[in-house]
Image (cartoon, rainbow, N blue to C red; front, side):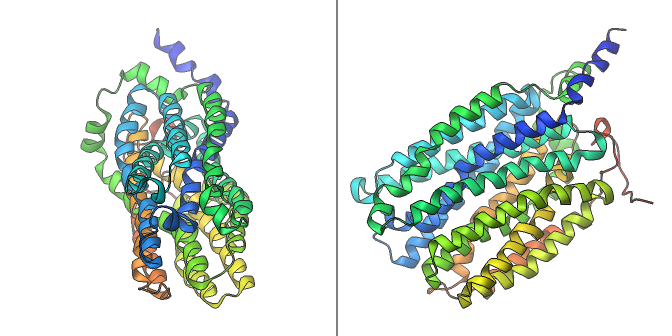
Length: 446
C-alpha cells in the first residue's frame, strides 16, 4: 500500500528531538530579546521620553500601558498565525514572527522623542508595539508545537521546556544589555542610550532568519496532512471540537501575570517609587532568569514522571505566596532580602509552571489545530498578564507605595489558573499521535 512508506517517513526526523529543541531555544531567545527590551525601557525611560508633559505617576502609568498594548495585539496574532501554522506549516510562522518582531523593534530604536515630533512619537510607539505583539502571538505556540511533535512520547515536557528556556535567555540578554546602559548619565540615557538595545535587533533578525529557514516541518504535521489532507479551516474545527480546551488554556495562561509583575511593575516600583538602584534591580532579573535556565528542565523532567498538574499547581501556589514577600522586600529597601526572595520566586518556583505549560497546553489538542489552540488560548491569557503592570500601578495608588493590593491581585490570578489546571485532565501518558483525538482520563503513576 502506498500509505506504508508515508507511515515510516516520519521516523527519521522523529529521532531528532534535540535538534528541534535547540532550534526552538535559539529562535525563542532571539525573538523574546526584542520583546523584553521594550518592557525594560517602558519601566525605566519611556515615561520621560514619550510622555514628558505628564506627572511622574501618570507618565509611568502611560508608559506601562504601552507595554500592555503589545499583549492586546497578541490574540489577533494568535488567530492569524495559528491559522497559517495549522494549515500551511509551522516553519512559515516561525520565519514570519522573527521578521515582524525585528522590524518593529528596530523602528522603535529610531523613533524621535515627544520633544522632537510631539504626539506622533507615542502614536508610532504604540503602533510598533502592536506589531511586536502580533508577532509574539504565534511565536511560542509555533516553537512549542514543533518541539512537542518531534519529542519522544515520554519526554515531551522536557524537550518543550527548552522553548521557555530560550524565552528566559532572551530576557537575560535583554536585561544584561540594559545593565551598562542604566549606568549612563540621565541625559545620555534619555537621548541615545536606551536606543542601543533596540538597534541591536538588526543582528537578531539576521541570525534568527538563518536558523529558522533551515528548519524542517514536524513529522506529525506532515503525516496528518498526508493522511487527512490539508486543514482548510483550523479555526472552525477548533471552535467546534476543542473550545473547552481553549478556555482552560486561557485561564491557566494567566500565570504569566507573575512574570510581567516581576519584570515590569516591580522594577518600576523599586526604581521610581522606592528609589532603589536601577542596576541592582536589573541584576535581580538577570540572576533569577539564569537560575530559571537550570530549574525549567528539572521541573519538566519531574512532570514527565509524575504528571503536569501537580508541578504546575505547586508552582502557582508558591508564586502567590512569594509575591507578597518580594514586593514587601522592595518596600523595605533591603537588597539582600530582595535578591533572596526574587531569586526564589522567579528563578525557582515560577519555573515549575514554565517547565510544564508548553507541553501541558499543547497536549490538549490534535496536530490539526494544535498551533491555533495553543496560540489563541495562551495569548488571550497573556493579554491579562500584559496589562497587569498597568492594573498594579493603579492599585498602588497615586504615590505608588501601596503594594499590598498588587500582591493580592497576583494571588487572585494564581487562584484562577490553579482552578483551571486542577479541574482538567493530564495527558502526560498519552502517545503524541493520539493527543486530542479521544477522551483521555487522568492517569497517575502506580
